[in-house]
Length: 294
Image 1 (tube, rainbow, N blue to C red):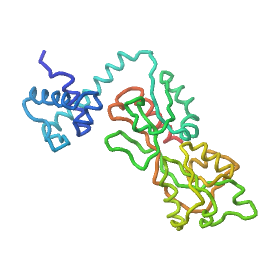
Image 2 (tube, rainbow, N blue to C red):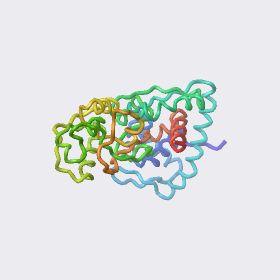
Image 3 (spheres, one colour):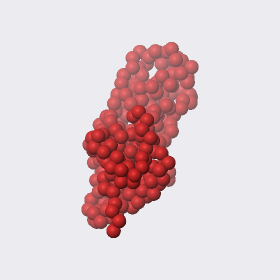
Image 4 (tube, rainbow, N blue to C red):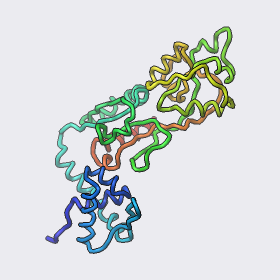
């Protein structure tokens, strides 16, 4: 049988080629950067020609490297699937998922019964703590996060586009001194989510009142608590249209007919290497299919 290069060298080459960085590839493979560089160099020595152009911090495939990647990448995927098929059997799959509480309660949990019926082997460890993207690979396999954009070194898929609503208690529009003009925000408290702190400024600018200052700005890290605070008349919550519609709370109303495209979206995020694992891949495919069918 013809001698082959070490599998670790091939894996290192594929990851550097996909990520474009020794540092990023080393993190994915839990190696030091020097150790990963040695593996790539070992493959280049085996083949007898360089595969990358070294540009400061970046590694860019040359013509030979690009050709090799196209030949190797599908083979590596097949190898991963083969090993997975032999080791999975009927054992449980476990996904450590970070997700914000409001998305979990409004969008994810209403469909988890469907996920269980479709994939009874998949179990979720749900983490609703903050900064879930920063914890990918360190306690979390994947995350559903709310952000303007995502680090391009991560695998990210936008799950929605939304509008910003000013949401308040029904009494604000039905009382003796109804709130009908954006300028009246100067009489009220603004409720702002820490993960969406630019939503209020975007709304004010679109409403033509960028200089209007509320009595105060109260910050929350919980969407459900923001909605409850608004329902109790503690202030006006600047949240997404979907948050308002999915809450279906008769105590709440949308204030002002102002269309404001949100700078924020929900994203499915994981490290590129994590997408090659079965729990992440199964959940990602189910999530995207479910959202498209909704």
